[in-house]
Amino acid sequence: MEMKEENVKKLVEKAKLPGKKALAWHPFYRGKIEVMPKCSITSYDDFSVWYTPGVAEPCKEIHKDPEKVFEHTNKWNYVAVISDGTRILGLGDIGPLAGLPVMEGKALLFKYLGGVDAFPIMIGTKDPDEFIQAVKWISPTFGGINLEDIERPKCFYILERLREELDIPVWHDDQQGTAAVTLAGIINSLKLVGKKLNEVTITLIGAGAANICLARTLIKAGANPKKIILVDSKGILHPGREDLERGKEEDPYKWELAQITNGEGRTGGIPESLEGVDVAVAASTPGPGTIKKEWVSKMADDAIMFAEANPVPEIWPWEAKEAGVKIFGTGRSDFPNQVNNSLGFPGIFRGTLDVRATTITDEMHIAAAYAIAEVAEEKGLSEDYVIPTMEDWEVFPREAVAVGMKAIEQGVARLKLSEEELYEKALSMIKESRDKLHCLMENGLIKKPPEIKE
Image (cartoon, rainbow, N blue to C red; front, side, top):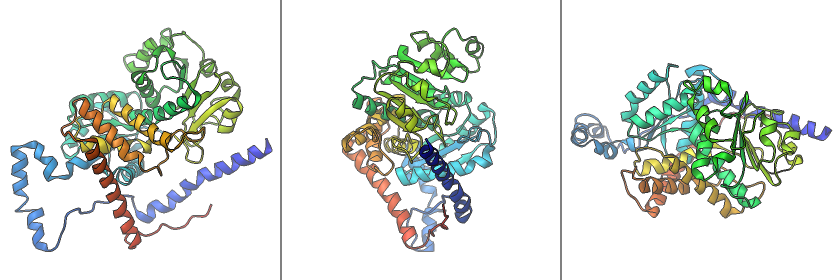
């Protein structure tokens, strides 16, 4: 036990290091992204082509045929990363200014992992209808919208409205991104323990944006809704919860799930929700101790658990393993089986943009989940490797292909490309983005950050 306590202290100190580096590195660079030309400029005469008077000609072409905007501008590869700052990471409602570093970081991941030109945009309102209007006003510039860190339940309302009212894909990474990557981990974990998605009982601890969307995703992927149990801060969701019924106008999503899940009619809290279940996914309050070892010990044989709270999972991995969990994952990179959204959105948007899709359907992000799972399976599954890492670079073009092909199949793609064309396009875009960055670093145009000691 003393050894474990010492390990915990080391882990806590290690977890603090990125924050120490961030306070030094962010002001060193004064931001993480910038706008750079992508066209050739050989003389000042070229500006008469790229700007006035020459630019009037593509303007007239687009006016005659709006689809030409994808040929004459970078709209086809622009994504807006948009937030109101009401649910930033685990920090809560810290506002749009304090949330800007997160959106810049997201834009950086988009470019490096997916070759996508993303722009961080903070909206200075908490009113969901004003937020929706602001996004609609700026949408002509973009080929896609990535919503980020918006508090529940308005994040559901905003996503639904924008998906209905815009002809470009709108995605909420805290919902669909988390669901896609978690589903990939579940798919491979079930393969290892010899169980089937349509037969297992699944408990989702936490009923926020991530698990509400995961429940819907699991059902569409083939899970039995009657075998899904959701738990929020007040207990297991079921039709007899008067508080859910009273709040169904403001938050209809939990109420709707209470009607179709929990076929056994379980009541109680986290301990009762874990009894005899095969899979548990926690996206709730950071631990340790949110989920207790004795509760986990009552799960089924060969149990699977993903405890995704950051910076500390709801239960430590060794405690879950001692309690009988076969496969365990977290949201952290220093433990095996990291459920990392960065595995999802860069490749998913790459495929979406490459076919000029008008939306991202649930089936598209489920297709991405299976592509993510396949990459890990091909490398060789084990209890400590059921999901790829960001270093498994091939996951991103593979996702792009799966998403693009599903968009074509569902009739939401403007372009119809073959699997080979999609793969080559995605691979080329991602490689070019990385090569450009490394070239700037090698030539000293991007300087090395200061060293920070542990």
